[in-house]
Image (cartoon, rainbow, N blue to C red; front, side, top):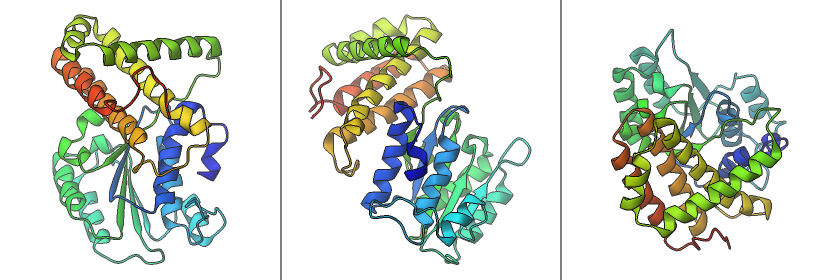
Length: 296
C-alpha cells in the first residue's frame, strides 16, 4: 500500500503486504478480519484497504491512486459505497445489522463494490452477530466486509471461519531497544525450531505447566518467528500473490493458528488442549518448509 509503507516496522509491513498482494491479485474474498491490539495499524489499514477496493484508477499493482474521487472520499469517510459500522454505547446492535443488510442488497452507487468496515467487531450483540453471519455466508458478489477486532475470542467462530484473518502487531514503543528486539527475534527462531523438531504432545505437556503470562509470551514469540519468516521475503522483494505461494500460505495458516491460540489462552481455555492443537497446526503448516528457518 503506497501510503502505509513508509515508516512501518517490519511486523506491520507484513500485514500491509498481505493487503497489497490481495489487491494486486484481484482475487478479493468477501470478508477479512484485521486482528490486533488497540495500539496497532488495524483501523488505518482497514481504510487503506477500502481505498484500494474502491479506487477509480488503481495502480498496476492494485494499490489506490490516492488522487481520484473515490480515494478522496474514502479519506474523508464520505464515499457513497463505504459504510462504517461502529458500536453505539457499549455494543453493535441488531438495528445496525438491519441497516447493513438493507445497504448490502442495493447495488453500488459509484464503484464496482460496496465496502463495509465493521469496527470493534467483538462488540456485536448475539443478534447482530447472527444477522451478520447470514450476510457473510452468502453475500452479494459486489460486497466486501472488513472487520477489525482487538479480541477475536469474542467473535463467533462461525464468522471467523468465513473471514481471511490478517494479524496486525502492536506498534513498537519509541524507546524500544533494537538490540533487545534482535535478541528476542533469535529467541523466537530457537523456539520455533524446538516446536517443529519435537513431539507436539510432549511440547504441549511442558508448556501447559507454565504460568499464564509465560504461555501468552510463548505464543507471541512464535508469532515473531513467523513474522520474521515472511519479513525475509518482504525485504527481498517478495511480491507474488500470497494466496498462491506455498511458503506464504503455510506462514499465513500458522499466523491464524497463533491468533486463535492466543485468544483461547486469554479466555482460559484448557492450556494443554490449546497448545496441542497449535503445535500440530504449526507442524502441518511447515511440513514442506525447512524447519531450520531458511526460506526460498
